[in-house]
Length: 394
Image (cartoon, rainbow, N blue to C red):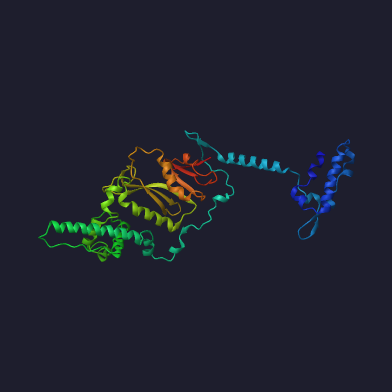
């Protein structure tokens, strides 16, 4: 019986047989089992052996006569195939792993990635990445207004004009014998022109120059053509982003109260007009600023050293900012524990379950975050950058 094992049909080959061939095949197996009870005769093997060369294999279109050796594969048990495949996959993973590094908490990090296989269905991104279709035919000005929209400009104009009028009225009341001064309200066109000058100074690397020098004859003529230097300084002086009368109450719970409303609106606009790719990155940024705030940070390793620190989640392909979180310093309750884990959870919550990769700094503790997301999202956390080296978690 052992010599006949190689002639057994697989499931696929058995399904291709006709009804008559299946009956003949089953009868041959039955006869073979009955013959096993008798002493085995090696001389009669050729006579008892079933001739499969005469079996006709039925195809979908026609019946084609082939030899059993060509049609019937070797017999292999189906369950054994699955077990062997699992063992081969485990061996492949171990062979491709190479050298591993064990962290203090017991986490194993591999210097080489595991064997690449087919991407799981839940990790396939089924949406178009890139700018929204409604922005494809927009001009530069219209694109800028998508992020700094009219609602945000209206808030700035309303509070700026309110503060300027209160200041001018207080001055006129304090100096009744002088000629009264009046404030010309800022219009929406003038506000966008003001923002254009600020953007142009950054593009020309002249944001460190004195304001009066920007309007000199030898400097860029666009500044003088947009508005006068005195008007620019007046708008810059009274520029406000919130209601000053209610700021003290809001500062009790939010250190960034002067800009929180506009910051939330800007984050919503950034996410609304862009769909990220499969790779995201989370890191910090220090905006150079030495003004008076309650959350100015000093980071000696940064070029600016002083400024406002913001946590960003960006598209890794083009550095497009998707959402930002301002770091307002230590809370009144004390020093925050697991800050990196909390930041990643806040920024990545919207994209959890989408099958996207996250690249982050070692400060954000990807080892602890690996267990915070769904087990099915195998691509949620994949890379960790540490001392300019890339390690993959096992």
